[in-house]
Image (cartoon, rainbow, N blue to C red; front, side):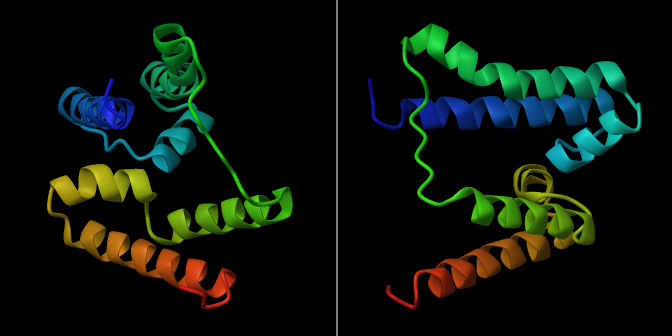
Length: 136
C-alpha cells in the first residue's frame, strides 16, 4: 500500500463530505460553524451526524487497517491548550475556521476565504519560526 494512500483517502472523504453538505443542505462544512450550530440546537441531525463521523473516523481506520492512525504530538499540554484557545478566537474573528475557509471557501474562490487562508498560513509560518527560535 502506498505511503500516501490513507492521506489521499482522507482528503477525498473530507472533500466528498463537504460537497454533500453544501449540495444537500446548503451549509459550509466548517467545523466551528457545525459545532456552533449543534450547541445552539440548530440542525441537530445533520450537525450531529457530521461530528459523529469525525469521531468515528479513527475507529473505521482501525477496523480497516488493524492499526491506529500514526499521530505524534511533540509539545506539552499547556501549549496545546493555548493554541486551541487562539484557534477558537481566530475562527470567531475570521468568521470561520480553517476547514470551512480552506476546504470549501477556496474551492468556491471566495475572496474572504482566500484572505483568511493566506492569513492562517502566514501566521502559522511566523509562529513556527518564532517557536523554533528562528532556526530554519
